[in-house]
Length: 289
Figure 1 (cartoon, rainbow, N blue to C red):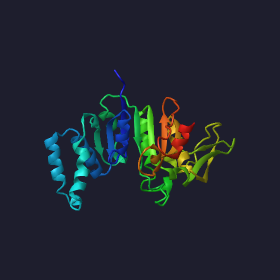
Figure 2 (cartoon, helix red, strand yellow; figure 1 turned 120 degrees about the vertical axis):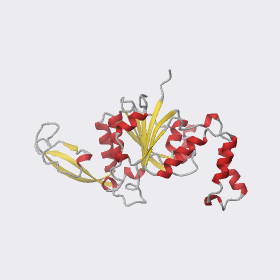
Figure 3 (cartoon, one colour; figure 1 turned 135 degrees about the vertical axis):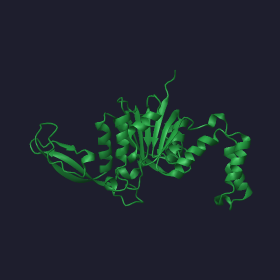
Figure 4 (cartoon, one colour; figure 1 turned 180 degrees about the vertical axis):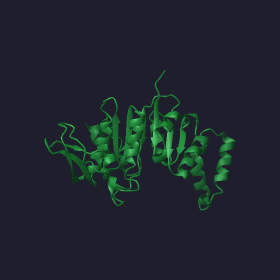
């Protein structure tokens, strides 16, 4: 029997990452999202895949009563719903996916495991809220009291569920935003190591050096790209081999210049092979080679 590439997605939104990964051969088993309207979108899209022609027409008729469609011309309405009416049996997505609605900080890892229904977990994927790192935000990084620590919920699930791989998506600002990186420096041998993230805001005065066992002191350095270093450290402590790259969606056929940081981690110490661009100037250069 072919092994399923089972997927848990967190910070799922309306399911864009799930859709792309299912097109790549994954099977989305669980999706977690905080916002109720996004969860309803996920549920409705599961439902729409299985409607017959009559049911689809009724859904469209009901949808057109909403205010957001009032200003559309008849042609625009027809084009808008054309794809929905023309879907086929091969375009069914999220059919095995169960939706967990709520704040991930309040959801125990066991709930995700239950919904796998005995399947081994191949991958966890998601993109924690990006405002703390975005150029459009205040760039408070991991010290943002609202969302800066949400990446650690991702780390928690990876630790508890132990997938073969994880895919972490976020804005490229993580690679250059300045962040206070806290180190434990040994008073005896001068060995320096990153302090655990979960103890970032509490005293570590009684911690010992991991090399010689002597007392350590805290050393704070404001570093460009410090958030990336901290995130890598947390995943590598779990035994994952990590690599990252900033990818532009336009280089892969999306009609939008959208750069995103992608971090990929392997539990089994496998090196990830990054895809070559399929569109644009960089693609043309590769073809010439």
